[in-house]
Length: 489
Image (cartoon, rainbow, N blue to C red; front, side):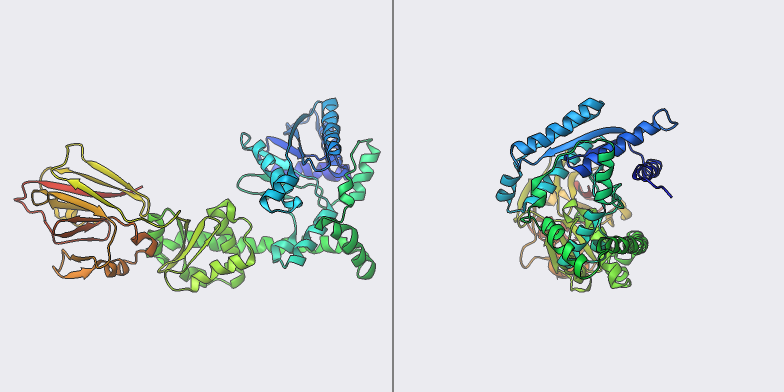
């Protein structure tokens, strides 16, 4: 067993460096005792490993000046900068008026400050693919975070608290001190003569976390359990193991969905491709336990957009109900649309505004170079060009191609579907409403409003990927043929 904080820290650092590719550790250092002790532990560990077999990642100290305490905030920055300069450690600083930002955006000071700090850290990593941000969160921080989550009504993830290693799409985080107490860090800083700054705002009960730290936890320790923080940390460790097991179950289910959705949700998978979205099968989803369903939604939503990283339980439940809803129901949230389709649920970037009707006229005969028109919903390109010779029977049957007798057409019009549209079917010569054909083909409602309909003077000629009419067919004697082709992009 490692007896000193320095030994425990060094062993933990070794384990992380062996398990991950790391180019740089970006240390978040405020100037307080916790983060200065963290910096001191890194310096001691690097000194011990100097000349070793493995080259250690580069160290960069990052300081964010929140500007909340005027000259005191500037002295915090100066303290960290001087400490780094004396030891030849790279130092980067950034500042912002957090009080003003919070007021303008209607956020708490804590939330505005946290968002600004993490934007700053993320910027450091943009040009450093293997960089890692290191924070000085310790055991008391962990206990406070778990209690805050509990009071807000959290699930398993909230009760687990922070992980010592966390990977997000834009940032990797390392929290090596979660099992250490604040008293141990303070003792190490005193022992190593590491300077630090005291932040008077940490004693103010104006902030939620401070009220919890200075009022609620001492009362609970006095009346309920004198070892409250240790008990919370023990619970957090146990629940993290349970969460890891559920995560493995969730991962297997999600991979199964991704590999089998094309067959289990044939129509919705096709519609999702046309919309540049993603699809999960309703049938496969409903086979899973409700707890796994919620975890799958959280994970799946996060894969679609970083804005969906912190969905509330109520928002997750709204999306979950779509898997049991009729076709056409949808949930729009944080710039994404979740749509209950025929045999699956589709996640797609939310369209900006409604689809406006359009109508494009193309005069024939056309130029030798042909013509290309681009669509977004459905996602594809419609091209037109002259065709030499007579197309084969297999070519005529392709749903993404239409050949017609151009000698009988003066103008083609490409437009959106209109109320009452009907088409004379090529196969039976019967007339059928276009909206019924879309339903029979199980094409999602949002796609229909912008789907291109190709018409001639006599009526609808072709709806790409959907249906060919009986108008102007090609025969062996057709003098002029034009080929229309739909290509997905």
